[in-house]
Length: 329
Image 1 (tube, one colour):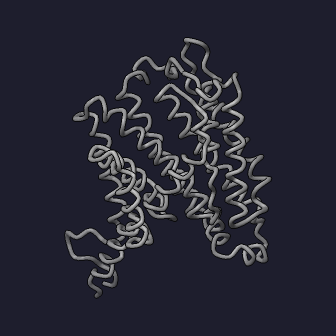
Image 2: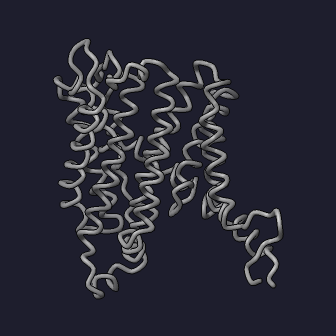
Image 3: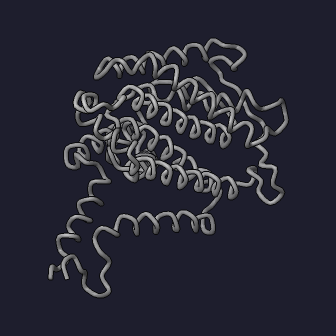
């Protein structure tokens, strides 16, 4: 039969999904063997993976390279700070809703202003807004100024059996959010909305001539990406209990953009791979030498040259190779 596989062999198209499932199961089992350091470090990477997936919605699927995406990350973090009473635990659900609403509103306003530009002008416009927020936060005493501010108590879930002060509980919350964000984006990108975004990335004038409201679609993509970035910022602030203007700055935007490029633009699992690869490699190299930035830079250059589709491209290539190896009948 055409397209049939050998008995006992997994079809090539199923391998990426199987690998993702195995990775999620491994992450779910990890707290059983992890020490205190990695119980906090792995959630940090997963938060960056959420952040990277949100940026990939713009860069990899809509064709909009933003260099100011950290603005929404920082807004989500500062929203938790503002929702936290002194020495009291904020309600998780109310503070999270405030953070998502603040990030979405900021993305909507900024998107209205920057989305009429394209190319390098769009990049510079997003960078400008991010830096304006950075300098405002650095000078705003009510936000802690350049030194930042502390959040002394983790959000309260309202559940007696689930306390975010417990590192394992927080770990599983972040894991669940990362999986939920991946699933949400996967559904969105397989919908007509996702196909329209791909069309805009490939040829926006043609999509416009076909009757698509391309500006509205891009604005919706920008708002969704900003909201998810705010979610990542909220989790970061909840984990570390501190906010500062660096969460709004261009360095964080550049770091997450590197994760997307390293992992592979236009794939949802690519940014997750990029986040884990970049942070773990940084940890390894910084333990080996104080000049770790040099080998890190060389690695990124070689990875971009050797893997133009990123680390995620290797999985796609292996999947295609297995599909082509399936015997035809």
